Every structure is written in structure tokens, then in C-alpha cells.
Length: 369
Image (cartoon, rainbow, N blue to C red; front, side, top):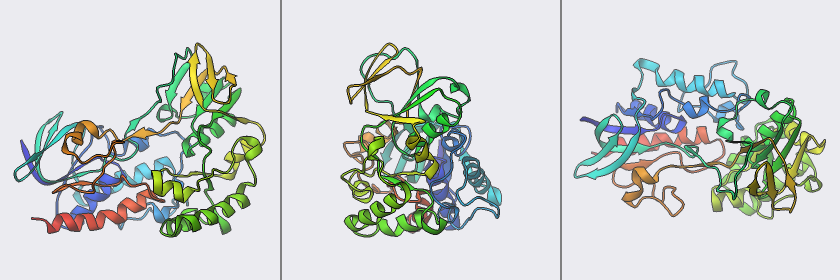
């Protein structure tokens, strides 16, 4: 049995930010992760991944990227950044390859039941993040080809000469479709259930989109939506004829209502839709052998289906019995008497957001006796 003043669960950007801010406030936390390395969700993302937000808005608390980092850091830049600072000044105490199975209340704190033994803590920060558990919808029927989640996709090499259906029009889905179309796939379809709110990664004067989206998030959603709509028209024109109409609900209204993030992409990602290299089709309804039935009454016959269908938080087994989760399994409370959730609110420039908010969180933990 180990005993700590503070334990942080999750060694991604949110968890590392919280742990570093705790150290900055004189508290030496224990950082736990189920993987054998920090930032494993980032390590496993597709090769061409870059942040949708600029480096100045996307670093750990008080710890900027080194000189020479691109404006939009790559996957490997992010991993190197997290790896570097988790080991700075002697490093954060970590317990990796440890799955937190359940967290229970104690009279004077919390008990974490883990795959490596029980751990007691005065206070616990859960920072396992939005992209914790890949989700593939329960589509009817059976697909006889290859079906994988976008978290398993790395690059287009295995799919050269193949017909691929990408299900999901978020940033990852559209970037993967572009990657496949320019990387040798024979046919690429993009299956769209709900028309996406599309925002260009690089805005006016070449500035990152977050220069605009961060302040707009704090304004009236109706006003912010009008600004975003004008920016979309300037960047992409009318995409309705290509199957990507402007949604009735704007990006900021949708973000505040459902916590959904907009689709942030470069212009060249839309170019492959315009030139027909990627064909937009309806939502997946069902499978039958190598046939996929779509909501627009059409059918396609891909060799591969890549489900860019998002993630779940995977919190119910750990804390579902504590009454701190909403019906959708996301945290319904920011804290519960020394139990804190960090990094579960979608925001523009999320890495920078969790870095900023980790500081008041650390002050709150430090002040609590």
C-alpha cells in the first residue's frame, strides 16, 4: 500500500500539466498511466498528424516549445515536448503499466484500486482525457473486409490500390481521407452523418485559427458563428455541391451545446473533395459482406472501412459508482471532495487550455488540507 498527498491519473497533456503545476506549488504527485510510456495516445496517432492550433497556444504550463518548432507542431513534436518536461528537474514520480480499475472514498481521502496494488491518496486528479477509448458504432451486419478505428491508422502505404471508406468527417477523418487520396488509394469515400462545421487551420494573414477561435469561444455563440461562417466562405467557398453543406447549427453553438469540436483542416484537404479524389457519401447504415449500405440509399463496396468515429471517456468502471458522471459517461461535476476531473471540457487549443487551468487546480489542491 502506497500513500500520497496527490495522485494524477493519465500521463497525457492534461495529466502532465496537472502534475507539473502541482510540482510548481511544492507538491510531489504520483503520475499513473495504464501504458508503458507517457503520451501514448499521441505516439499512436497517424504519421501526418499536426496540431490544429499554434505552438504558442499548445504547450505545457510555463514551458514553451524549443526554438525551431513548426508553427503547427507535429505528432512527434508534441510527444517530445511531453517527454522532455515530465523528466525535467529530476522528473515526476511515475507508475506506468498501471491500470486504475476503481476509485473508492475513504474517511480521509481516496483509495485507488490498480493492477499494481492499492494506492491511497488525499486528493486525486483524473486526467485520462477525451480520447481514451476508441468507439466504433454498432453498425448492423458484418463487414467481410478490413474494419479498423482511426486510432489504428498510421499512413496510406498499406492501402495503396485499395478502395477505402472513411466514416466520420471530423478533423481526423478528413485528414485521413486526404492522406489516402494523395497516398495511392484507388478510391476514397468519406461517409458523413452530420455535415461538419469546417474551419481553416491557417486563418487571415497566415495566423493560426486559434488566434480567432479562443476569443470567439468566450463571446455570444450566435455572434461567433457568424464570424466563423464568413471565414469559412472566404477559405473554402460553397461546398454544398460536394456533399458538405453549411450546417444549420454553427460551430460555437454546437460546441457549447454538445461539446463537439469543429473540423479544422488545411485548404488542401478540401481540395481533394473538390477535385473528386475523395467522394462524400451518406452515413453508414449497415454491412452485408463486402457491401456497405448508406443513408442516402446508395451502396459502396470498399476493401477497407476506417471508423473515424471518435472516442469515449472510459470512466464508468473507475468512478461510475461515485455519482460524478452524467448520462453520457462524461464528468458531471468538476470535483467531489478532493476528486478532480481535468481536461474533459473541449476548448480551442486544448493543450494550452489544460495547461492554463492546471495552475488554479494546483493552487486549489495545495490550499486544501
